[in-house]
Image (cartoon, rainbow, N blue to C red; front, side, top):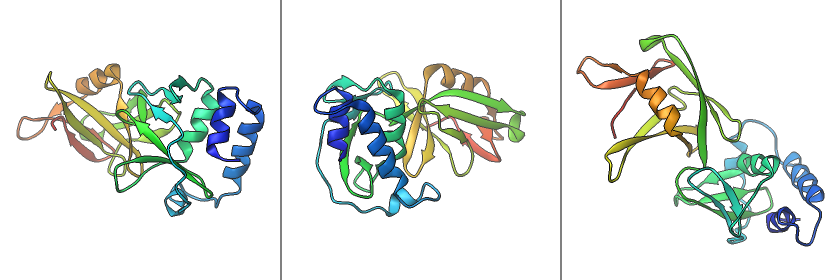
Length: 198
């Protein structure tokens, strides 16, 4: 069973939802285990665009209808990959399909901090329950938001996949900023310093 059939199961066509989830889980279990980097090693055939998308608010959809089952979204998120061409794909050992991503594939929805200044540690939780410790391996980057000129912060989650911080977290992050030696605002986490500028 492929990803297209699994998605049809989500919308109630042609198959039972439970069997689709179970078959997809079995497919993932049969894949090589290990660190998340194994996903980058898979090189399955490209199977086209089946209508999967991620909106800027983090909602996953199939052919315009939201995927409401969080368990299915989390399964898909585990095998999401961004390739050198900038496009996003769901990848299994057997196939690869397009995912249209409006902004970032994930949202950072919760933040915990310990310490202050250069000793600060920041950990984020994404909308698909990834726990990410911000730092050298998971940096923050800031993009100018047109037309307001405000900043949109992104956190690297894994590979080249990022999470956009929600507005509430962005405000919390700015409150944790301190001036550096040149007077520019920075945020520290796990020994890494991130300037609040694009």
